[in-house]
Image (tube, rainbow, N blue to C red; front, top):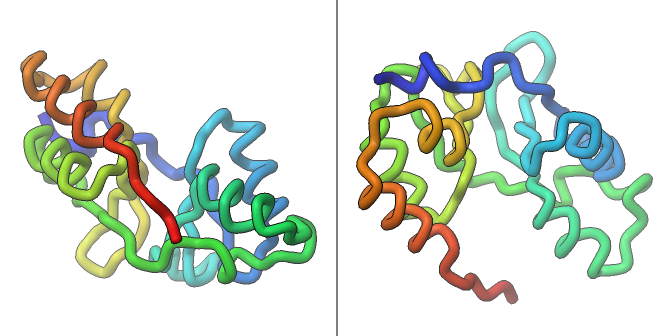
Length: 146
């Protein structure tokens, strides 16, 4: 099975200059932990992501005002991505290697196509229980932040 068959298409996005509050509001309404950041509304080229963890550690824990903090101050610029044609093993390997549970799906020009989550893979793709276990084991390893 391919990523295009299970990914969430047309996810809500933010622009780099949008505020942390806007991203948090999207997360609340959509019950998600990630918002892709695109270059602009015309190109939809992926330039980063912001996660609930980024907002918590990079905004709230630093005492910043979420209404005044632009996403450029807390977003991840280096983003692990996959393509719509990737299979479940490729996605699971990326999740394990980079300790992420959600991966933006882009085309060759880095235009956002969707997002695939660990839950999408686990529930809809043909994966072995050992693959799921190994991925969850790697993804949940503690990470230290400066």
